[in-house]
Each structure stands twice: as C-alpha cells, then as structure tokens.
Length: 114
Length: 114
Image 1 (cartoon, chains in turn brown, yellow):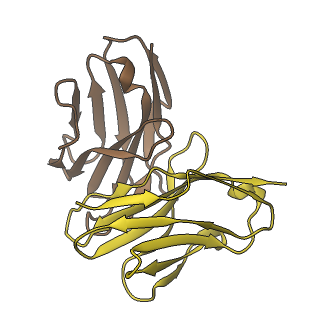
Image 2 (tube, chains in turn red, brown; image 1 turned 90 degrees about the vertical axis):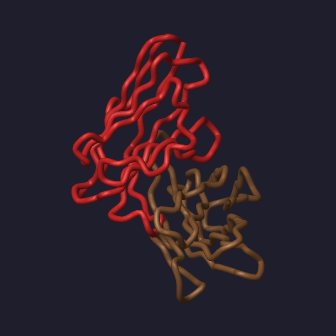
C-alpha cells in the first residue's frame, strides 16, 4: 500500500539553528499539505500545494518558515532560525484532489528545539 | 470560517463497553465531516467520512458516526471497544468548496482499560 514518506522522524536542534523536513507524497496525489501539531492539540495547516503552486499559506510564519514543491512531487519545509515554540510534530499529507478533505498522512517529523 | 469542537478531551472506558466521542461543528455552508485516529508517535489515519447521502456512516475497525444537521453534530460510536482502540481521535470539517482547508478539533484521548 502506498504511503506518504517523511524524514527525519525525529530532530533535536538548538534555537537559532536551521532545520528542514522532507516529504514524498503518494504517487499521483496532486495536493500536498504540511500541518503542525503541538502536543495535546489538533493539527493546524501551515501550507497547501496544488502541484507546484502554493494555494494556502495563510498560517505559515513566513519570517522563519518556508516551503517548496519545485517539481510538483516531493516537498521541503524549512525553519530558520528555529525557536523554542517551534517544538511540535510536523505532519505531511497528500490527497488525489483538494475537493473532499480525504487526506493520507505520513508518520510525521517530531521536532524538539532546545 | 468553519470550526470544530470536541466536547471531551479524555474518555476512559473498560474493554467491551460501548463508547461515544462527541463532535460539534460550526459552518455557514454545507460541510464534509471526518474522523481520524492517531496512535502514539504516528500520523493520522482516516476512520470514516461523511460526504453526502446516508447520515449514518460506517468506518474501519467497527466505528460508525451519525451526521445530524439540525444538531450540527457528528458523534463517533463503537458498540464494544478493544484495548487496541486506545488512541487520540480527531473530528475534522471542510466546506463544500474546491480547495477548502480541513479544520481539526482538539482531539479526544480514548483510553480502553482491561
């Protein structure tokens, strides 16, 4: 069964350092999402791509966060510089279309900022 | 904008007992509704979805949910739970507009005790 791949699974970094997360969606899925999940809360959408274009980044802290999906397949989410409050699980998800909300999630990347 | 409220943050039950996890939503337009499950240190997995048609929807692992438009609710039920059902459950909503974002509730931790 096809899965959404994410790496790394765990990342520990010091504040002010740069960190990057990678996601490879299910083949053929045009829509890709990055969510942030703070411990004890529900996921919050950071950015949504349709193919290589950003369609929603209204909740992305653009002063320190960036995301790209250059060829419309895999994607990278970067944080620079990392802050203590960025400690969270970063979840990537994909869907065949953006019309119904049926998302397939990866296992996530857990970030700890010291 | 749409929103989701999960009425219980934690639900402890004994094995083989029935369970109901409550979810209410708010939206000015028609919605799609979802329940996702998250096991520790993993991504989210779709349990079931309501897109249209019958208001009683059945999902994986013996779960079902009923869409009640007048009550704006989408409660999740299972007649007899197992230890393996212990997990975090998230209710989510998106509106019937192309590209609409999926909005999650805060989650309900279901703990099944022997």
